Image (cartoon, rainbow, N blue to C red):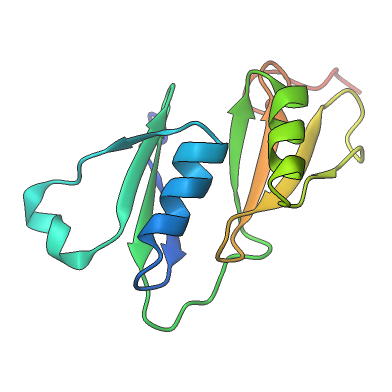
Length: 130
């Protein structure tokens, strides 16, 4: 039986580590964590934030996740919007689900990232009964 989510892995191209650090560490404020020594030769990076790990793995023939995505909870939604827009990154709000504050961006490799205001996450609030 499933007890939780451990991590999500997204693809990045070989040599994309600097761009990944700038986006995930710099813009999103995630902390880079060391990979186990046995996996370091594969390249890529690992990041974490409160309750989530994101693994970025090297794919020689990168096919970015454009529909599939990771959804990250954000404490300062207005602040992350300003940070991403100032950096020239997309920040497209999505109001299709009432009473949920969320938007989409993309990492430097084209992977879709959903950002949800902390407290509005689908695993945090249940919809009202119909």
